[in-house]
Length: 224
Image 1 (cartoon, rainbow, N blue to C red):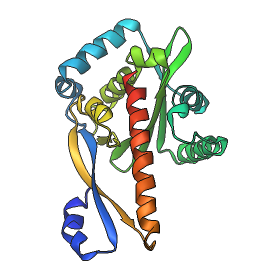
Image 2: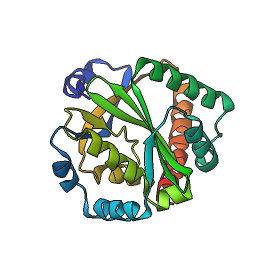
Image 3: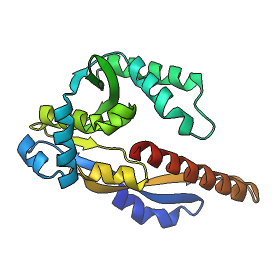
């Protein structure tokens, strides 16, 4: 994102590469919790009140297993082609390495002793990146992710950092992240395609199909 304007000027010089403009959402901390909370949308404040009435217990933990099981049981089936066991093992290895380096945080929301939602955050310089999350039906309807994010913002409200929601280009999810008062930030996805005709065209059609299918599945997951 920091290089967006420069890349925008340079993109015409790279005719063999595709520059696709994308968006993420940044919430700038460091101003105090009251100011952060005041920027929440009306619906976000309402859902936060509802989540607090439910009484979520929010704690940081070191075991990514519950988060993987939540994803496997509530989201994986919506992904075209499914998710291999190898992918979960890779995520476990990546998390373990990040944890050893001190740049990962894992938070869970529990009710009556059972975990219903979790979020994985990655720290990089002055940024905290919302990289992965999952929730079951109770976690979604009980606004557990809203409760966890608000809890995190309250803990770090005075620190000069940027919380990057790492949003996909899916409108319902983007709306959710914007409801916390975040700002839209542009960046480029750059791809150089060396395939010859007609392989390049076939690849583009396949990519468009899977992107459309994945977007619909993700939206259904967030809205349910």
